Length: 146
Image 1 (cartoon, rainbow, N blue to C red):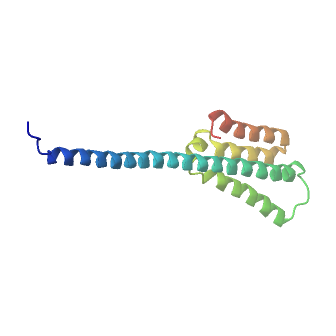
Image 2 (image 1 turned 30 degrees about the vertical axis):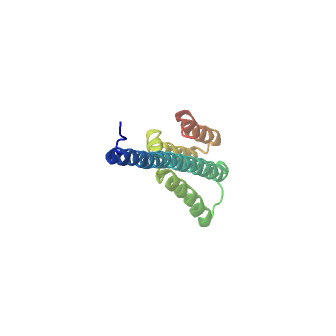
């Protein structure tokens, strides 16, 4: 029997399948890796926003307690402005969350924070205010937002 000439189509097809498989593998690895990096990026930003929110509530809460617990006393206009700025800045931080905004709304953080400040301002009860702060922070922990 005489040797048969090579089938050029079969050789070309097997080469294309090999190259195509490599390209497909690289593309798939890129897409999966990119997806994973995006999830990690979002998770990192959520964690960062969560920390910023809790730090802001803690810091503002401490300043508000010191100011309103010792009230009534002689207060300068500058002091009133500064404590108002603390409350406003804390509300801004709560309101401007992008990655945890849904949880902030579901837990009514801004409403609860505003009511807590209002109660502290009217009743001067630092203990009740602290419990409100704990409830706000605990809501995030229960919801698994960390």
